[in-house]
Length: 248
Image 1 (cartoon, rainbow, N blue to C red):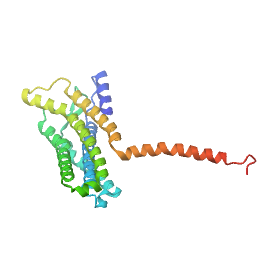
Image 2: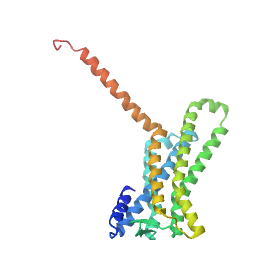
Image 3: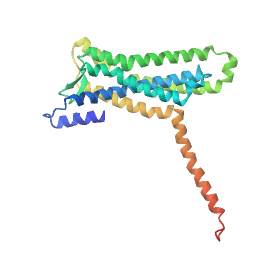
Image 4: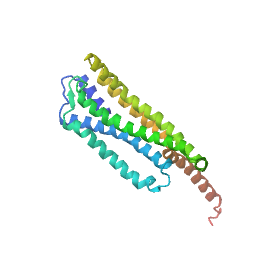
């Protein structure tokens, strides 16, 4: 997105320049692929919580190798989902924007992207979280007592992820509103593509920072690093104290 904005800035400084061509379409394609992969990463998080809470007895579903394969498939699916838009020429060069976008007049292309990036992963996430909530309510009292601590922790993280998902949903709201206005009035609002790009960039930035605070594994990495250094310092101090003045 920063690269795309740099082209936009250069084009505004020198309006005679044109950045159209195949690279422009590929650049926009890659941006949409990354955006799609972001949403499917939340699908993986939802699946991880599902395996921990509902299918906790099947440890294979929680293994590191399984999720490495899942992350690989996540990127493959993202590349494949957006590929039809590239092949159909939906990423058009807009002279006034100095970038390639899916034009708001191209309703077919916008609907395809909306269904692929927003509708499909959000539907899967909603279904998974609904199953988790139903399972926790159906669990017997004995099971709840035995897994109370683990479930409380997972449900707390679950709530944080749901809040983050609402943030992610908010990323697409400006685009949806602009499309609705165009459908009703046949008029594209001023700075529509700038609003779309800014909402995507800001939303993804907020989501990336928020992931640090809702992912215990990332917090444990920082906490373990903070604990290592004082430990090493104490060990060096003790070692120095034990050294004899004559060197033996």
